[in-house]
Length: 158
Image (cartoon, rainbow, N blue to C red):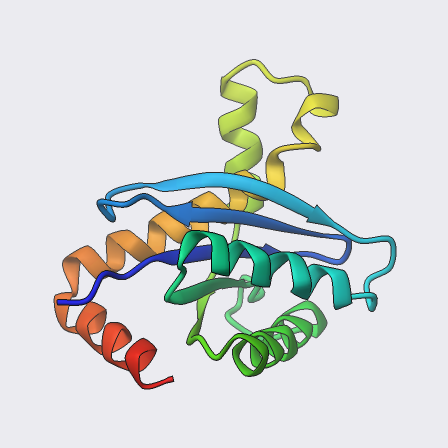
């Protein structure tokens, strides 16, 4: 079976939190936060993601989809879907959209519990949210091996 290396992304208006699966596919590790000056200026964001993909030999991307609590799709989710389509086209890798509701809230809760002040949290909350998104997806795959196999096949086809 081919190895699956995942990159988790938390796409926001000004930042993209980035996390990566470990070599054993057990845990998601926070990696970095990519910042941009304007929401629509994505060229450097794509370039940085592509560099991480090459450096880490990523085979698939997991992108948090910010659905509303009622499960509907709003403006932010539509922008995320467009970002996902561009990423798949640019990288040639499968992009899985994964429900990310309340991951930023959970990230703040974890940081609060660790004693981090709000000012300190701003520099790490996005990559922690990406880590939570990726870990949730990895946990799902560990309980659904047929889905993991399907993703590996899809990655090999692209």
